[in-house]
Amino acid sequence: LSGSEAISQTQSVFRGKNLLEQPSHTVHFGTIRDGETIIDEVVVTLFRAPNSFTKEDVIEISCHGSPFIVQKIIQLFIKKGVRTAQAGEFTKRAFLNGRFDLAQAEAVADLINSESEAAHQSAMKQMRGGFSLILKDLRQRLIHFASMIELELDFGEEDVEFADRNELKDLVYEILRTIRQLIDSFSWGNVIKNGIPTVIAGKPNAGKSTLLNALLNEEKAIVSEIAGTTRDFIEDELTIEGIAFRFVDTAGLRQTEDKIEAIGVARARKKMQEASLILYLIDLQTITSLADYETEYAEIQALGIPHLIVGNKIDSAKPETLNFLQNRPEIVFISALNKENIELLKDKIMTLFRTDQLKAGDTVVTNMRHYESLLRTQESLEAVISGLDSGVTGDFVAMDIRHALYELGTITGEISTEDLLGNIFSKFCIGK
Image (tube, rainbow, N blue to C red; front, side, top):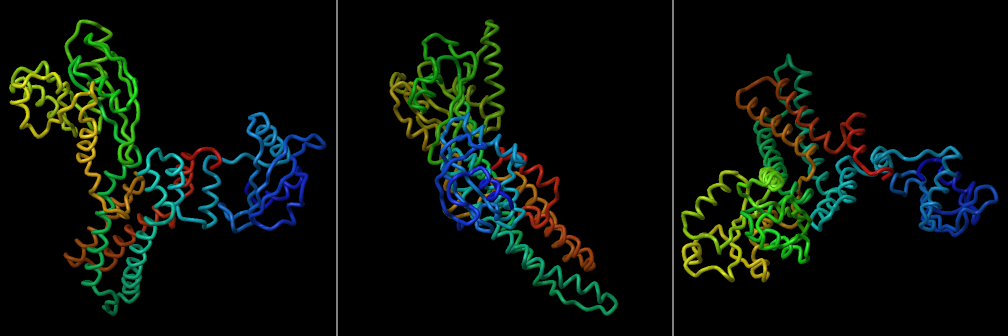
């Protein structure tokens, strides 16, 4: 419970110490009662404003884990006039009460939803204010020049300049460099937050299902020597070096008269077009010439999607096949059945996504809303440079600076609207 009556409402149904007289950050044993009927023995934790998550009085009740007991306690409070929290309302109250800014509040949801080490670390850093500090510093420096130009406008008839145009241009260029670095980090940040949808594709019997099982180290997919065994896609998630990969095993790509298999092939091609990475398997036992391979490879290249060519069944390939393929740098040679070179394949995947492109401690943009605001900030700052170069009047320069300040302010919540807040917090889980 959070709010001015959280402690008094709890005290009205609690038998134990008088919570109204207890200090903040204390824990108390007692019972929750509906009249004289004991619902459960509980532990009540008390946080007094402003030293709580929401900066309001907060009570946490720890009861036994029966859904029936939980529901009875919630119903008891509702009967007394306490209402259930809206989606994200605790975090929204924390933001409105100045506990943290909007970017940090959004990081709470990212932290709850994080499914990999990298996503967890990124959300934790943003929640602790790393991203916000950068934006606030940029905004503060811009505000100084904006105020100087605004002051010039008040003395328009006297033709004075309070803001040095060269200094302003140097500052805008410096801020633009930081903004562009943040924008560029989004492609990697999106990978951290949402993972990488990875399709395992290839002709029938290339070993796609065997590879999925080898990557996951479990028998997830049915493996058979009969071509066309996989008729729909099978998927599961694997974390490699802190990044989540959603591997999808698809039907073998071929022309078929079987209507069910044909549907599977069509779905496989659709999944390939939607993927962020394709692992395309070639069966080294069936490749008879370099021309055969290049025809297959050209089809994958034409999709324009990041890919790795995986030469499977290296343990049973003919020496002449390996001879004409061994100098192809795009091929990773493996045996999915014997789990040979699976770790090498994982290394190649991580190299492809350049996991070392950001140094430890770099701030990464993971939120689409932030990314779009940064793009609009960049556009406004480029307009400032263009205006200064062409000698436009101060009022136009001031207008572009105000646009940049506005966009930066919407990220941290220094500028916000009810519609914006409602949209952001509606995506939270109920209560949190």
